[in-house]
Image (cartoon, rainbow, N blue to C red; front, side):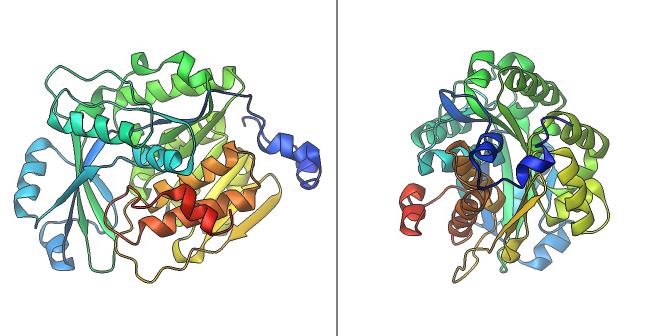
Length: 353
């Protein structure tokens, strides 16, 4: 297992030595570089009957072809179009918190690609991955939100399929405290190699590697390779309850115990039940933020990761990192879309962080 915290050091949490072990990356130009699918979201309301009639599994993500995307889009109600993508959402939120981030993802040289590039740069994120020019369009995700706020995602990867190891800039990776990848990136074959290259470069430079499992169906699609990835290449793991159980089996407690054996930090979210952070032998728990109404859960995990990684790269405690994540996730579920509608730095400051 990579870089596991010594068990005895964890007991010394209040002592300076654990502060060093908790964030042992080296000084760097950027806080986080995020690798992910560059996706433009189209979000529309839908009822349960619509999902059933179209054979869609609620609250999951499935990959679709261009033809399937066209057919489903024609059936959808009025849509709200905005830049998305899991890691892209995380990086935009990190910037809103005041963090320095870079996004690595592939868009086409088309109108949607221009919109995506403009949006993420306008959010304060560095995005210099070259456009794809061979004809595949920019990826899109048709998101159906049911009255209970749950989202069902249908993703056409398009240009995302052409993110390759050549798009990984060693200087950027080595200049980032954390290299973060969304699990969805494991679907495009070449992107696997891109991430493994980035992970190796990060560790070579003494930096950290983080992974979000993204979706239980994504975990099931790549179960063996995800297990190998977590055991051998990942320092910080983000997962919700269903994802960690999909990865390790059993119930939540046994899956969490397994995760503790393989990564330095496991960040496990449990919806309205809050989140648990496992660091070596220590456990830190925080409650979910109270919100008046859940409108759309799209991006909740992405925003939690942003808050946590921002805190982590600024040297905050595990509890503070989790609280930052909970505050960011609490904001994003109160409106449609996965890009924040407020300045997150001001929001967390108003909450005492």
